Image 1: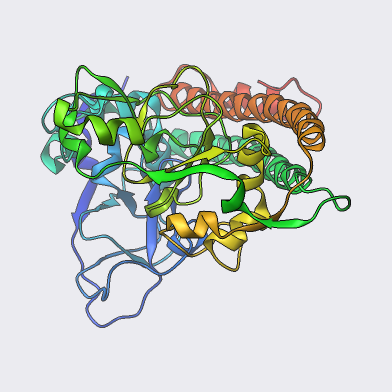
Image 2: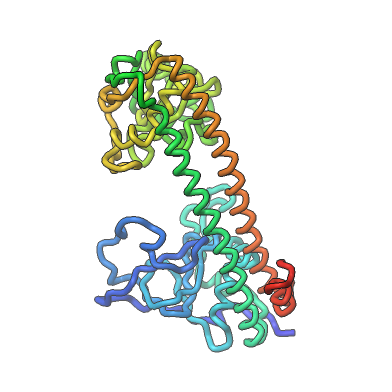
Length: 412
């Protein structure tokens, strides 16, 4: 049996800077490993220039020190540049770089890195500030390295198996995207194509307001529920109550509290930042909550059913009017006037109720299918992680496993 040695003996840390060279910008993530940044992120990089970025070469192992405990590490397949905060490691001749890639991404090794994080608090509860892995701590992790021929067999096996799993995951992700398209199409049906005229929405609302400024100072362990933009959801009108805060406002703020207090059937809209345009319907769980200054409170009048209004404001054609020329939009701030001035078709109350019933049924089916697909993706990720860990820790014989998972054999 090979002896245990610290992993730092199997690689060298590389600190080569880009200077004036123009090289592809790479990123590292737990899901994708090392890939070109523009393949996973839309828009340009926030950096203005890249002369101080580190150069990595094909076969190098790149580790995102901030997300090491989440498995953000991988092997580069090309020459490129990465963040100056990343760690670039060049494997020695004793180790197959593809094997080292899988070892670093195994559950066992991620656990070893997590136990060596430098920061305040615990990574489990999100309390760590700047949870970086220190290069010296990383290098002290002991491993037992198999012979180079065995490393290559393990790497070839895992390359093939993870590629197959990635293909399945990609197919499932595409089906989830199709479900999102189906949801958008369903919401577009909130406006019938006959039997109603266009109206200015503000004429049919009893109240359009936003929360008072400065109430973040009152947030604490007691008080009344305080609904913030973080409690909105992008793809659902159901409120997100996981991080619902409490605000203990002083008696001097009673008038503001009364003005910004919600009732069941009210509709809440994000009006600033990334959550602008997101919509929630108030139910009994948050009735009597107050809204923050970043949330618009809309109270429907007698001619509008609250759930219909929530669906209408979530519909792609209304999102385009609110946020810009595309669904999802470019606007990051909405005014109360933007809400009041919306011109939309307004069906009768009876027609609104019929449309709501149809949309409810459709969304229930879409949500069930989406939940099922999400669970499948999670199971695939768990299988991939278990397979990698078992292979690099010697829990399975990859030669036997390869025979079992080949065409005509039973899949693992």
